[in-house]
Length: 259
Image (cartoon, rainbow, N blue to C red; front, side):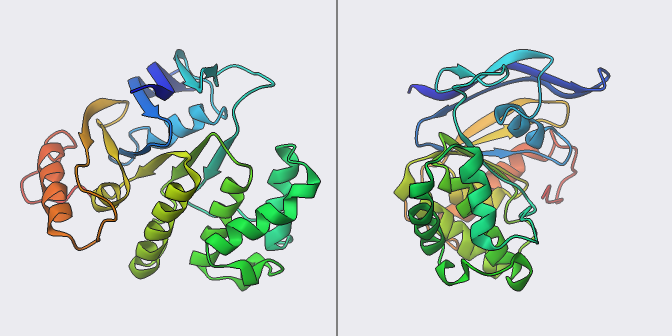
């Protein structure tokens, strides 16, 4: 399998003292959905920041489609980033928030309307194009943030626990919509989560990290065919096996759920 994203021996520290990532290797194929799973504070979000170019590593390499994203470059691949918080500017409408990233990505102005309509409609919030963020529910605001990330036609979409603040019913709906969007768009997705069930439902493959500073503990390929059903006993069985395998590594005793 050809790697679209390639991370080798990635090491990151803060203030030159606090190590966030000890030595991480990661590969993601084009169009692959990979979930990054690990305990709090292990460095999951740090890895996304390196891939997005927001954070420089101490050593190691990170490439997207052959381009080293740890170094400044005019031809850096476009990266869509969805945060845990929607990060919409409250003084701009939904469409104005998306227009900001379209302008920053040098998308031709003539394409803006079609791109905004396409992704808002795909996420079932086309009627809210002129709305202010505070007029929307939490789930609707997060849909806008996903539309904003996809509208620039990114090489890869990085998602940092995007559904963790939503109620479970809304989160389940959003997970299903995300799978449909991913299948339609064909983008590679790297999805950080604390939730083992979420990772099993969404991903082609799960990369499990150790406690911080992180290294890769193991990888799990998800053999369950799509479309998946959230209550599928096969998902429950796989989730249970992953819980059992990480409990000791993550520092939990018997009978404690590491989520």
